[in-house]
Image (cartoon, rainbow, N blue to C red):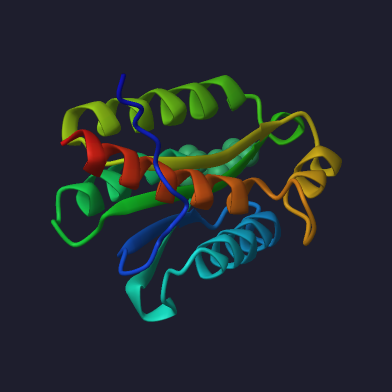
Length: 154
Ligand code: INI
């Protein structure tokens, strides 16, 4: 029996992060978490690019451009869609998640997903704090693991 497991070793990995500016204070906290996770697992700051887009709806097109650029080993997407703030929550949140899943399958690029979809600002703050449970940090570490497991499978 052979077991394939991706290590959380990001040494030498080039990472692209897509951030949406809507609810910027939350996304900045997710970005801090993602940077923490990458650095703790060996990714050098000079190997990380951060791209800002206006809102979560614009994340997929920027992510696809990065996924097909040949410049990255893995990507991370960060955003915050808050139900209390928009009548079109469903029209933004669902398509973004579906599109990111689709881009992974079309391009073979692993993409960490921390586009929060929450009921209110309090829930967004809980998931983007400086301690454990920062979803940006979790997505970044997951992105490293997936890059390694896909490399092993290929
Ligand atoms: N974008 C977000 O990232 N989060 C939101 O909660 C949000 N709300 O509430 O509407 C939001 N809307 C903007 C959207 O992502 C696009 O940027 C906009 O529609 C322009 O295309």
